[in-house]
Length: 270
Image (cartoon, rainbow, N blue to C red; front, side):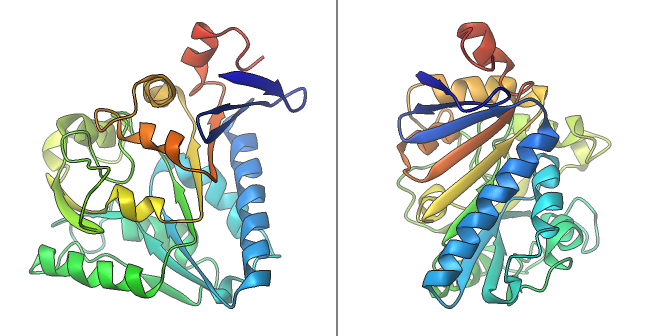
């Protein structure tokens, strides 16, 4: 890792092709990530008639989404929106549903050209995967806004089911226990027995087809995942390590999520 001070408050460095930026707190992280995404959106919309985005649904994305939806310079009516995963079998209006999370925080806050939801209540989940894969083929993704799970997953590609060469763009997965426990840790469910066991997820190759990926990962509960993402061998044991292979990807951290990097290299975060 080579570290470069960008200003008094931000540390920036690269690991492989992955750009990493550490901010003093999650609010500034969200503000700067939103500014970068906005700039990229506006540039792309100068080059093409419409663009396609995939969003993650998680508390880690809230600061970023708050800032992004407040940006009046973005021509939302030229953007088609998708999300990257959804629980199977969760009640239609459950607040934990990822489509519902995004509907409240961004999908109904700004006037997208179109919004495409994964149906976690579809009678045939495999057919729903095929339907959503068809949409992603029709609307090739330009930008992905994502996070990293405590177990190193991206979307719901947990270590046991992650495949860097997955032949399917969208698939049904069984959720790893660590993934389900994270939902409890973040107060999204009262107990692990209430967390669905299966989900539909966009796969890793489909996410990496985007021209740009912006990955927002604040908070201390993600510190181990961040450390492994940047230091482990690239492989499915920590799916987020694949981000180090993708040009045009930026990882946004706050002091807490970067805390183990500061422990292992005193240059980081200073």
